[in-house]
Image (cartoon, rainbow over all chains, first blue to last red; front, side, top):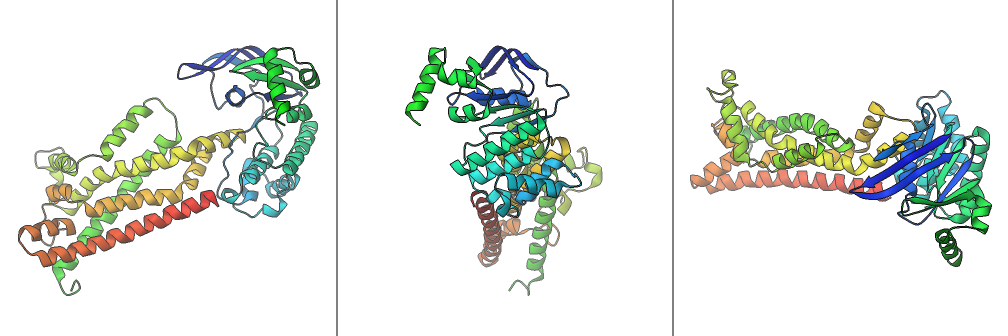
Length: 225
Length: 221
């Protein structure tokens, strides 16, 4: 179980995340939704260990294999295949595993292209394949489909579902699309101004949200989608 | 004209030898210094960054004065008898150019390092491998920093005049020769040397421009 206790993150004196207590159960899929600046990225970066909380502690990640896809992953200037194989760190079958991962995200025709010459959506798919070549206990994805088109999004969601089923990992992802959270997550957390406003089973939260702020957010989203 | 005059040939030779050597040494110092600053967050980074920026704008005569005092007979390295020699000029140039290369390197690395660090952390790559990947990704812009250092080196006059002494057939370089010839009213030779300097400067700038264009294409293609 991953537990956050009294976690506060401040940047320049401004509180960007404040979580008295939060738990993530192993093997479950969690979707983080909320506006820009609600704290989704900060929460994921803290779980990934790339940002340390100003105060409080995060328990349950010691000794765990944690995979993380940042919002703007770096595409190295070598080939797409080498970019993905990089995560396998000299594994004997690195090339074959990387090829399979790229096929899964629909990138088979771009394996020899240079990573830094891909479009935003292609780079995002490549980066996802690079993360998914290894098995993790916890997988953290920060808006994994923010630059992809609808067809690629379907492919990525299918690939993710298969990965989670196969590895039984805990999946925590952020998304701008409540619909995606509904499709991928068991539980959804709505964040606003650095606080978890509401948390619940995906279906329940979408169809009968309790908090007025969650209702307003979902109403606004349904009007604009 | 240049081929026929042994002094001119010698002046150009000393200039190139001094500039190439000082740029190479400065690159060996400045690039690791810049990478260390740009790729990492550490205590004292802000002050180190401020010192580097200050040194980037170090007046050449101040650099010349410092090196002069260190190498003079009564200075800490006086026993080496390096004053008024090409090595003394190289030392002064290294004092001037290393911070410039370090500052530019740091800027180049700090643009890419956050994204590389996040990405590497996500796939379990850390330490030296991550640093190596960062350096590899920045290698082309590094050339720009080194070429800028070379451009500064070849155009330098104050510091090399102070520690080199502008000695004929020994430490006279193009810039100090131009200054001397102008003072003596021999404008033809001064103009000829000026033209050579301009041509070299044009070639360096063209190379920098090409490297920058290449980098831009790589990032936006």
